[in-house]
Length: 125
Image 1: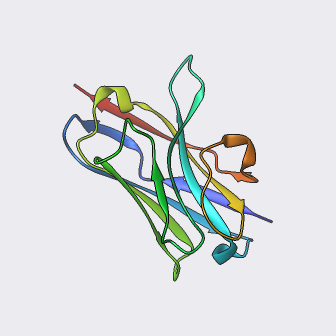
Image 2: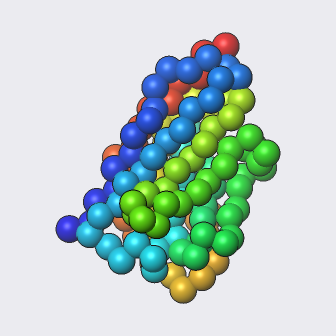
């Protein structure tokens, strides 16, 4: 059974840092690209960042480029999203998702096979 479990969300002041984790199980981790998406109330689910199965290719949304960093720890089957200088507009439920692929990354939600339940991030001004 495939599971993706996010953690690390919470309430943070604007400008502080936060690190989200996505622990995966039940899949061949090294063959999956993993991404973070987010959804604010009343809005569509938006792409945030993705990382290739090899870990060598990362892709970011323009809105988080230079502030957020995605990484993966292959020893722990875990993907992280380091959020530096978060702003109130980053407030959302953050989801991780996994897609089996040979290489590269995708920013399109429909291509992802598995999703976590999400973790809430609230950034206070």
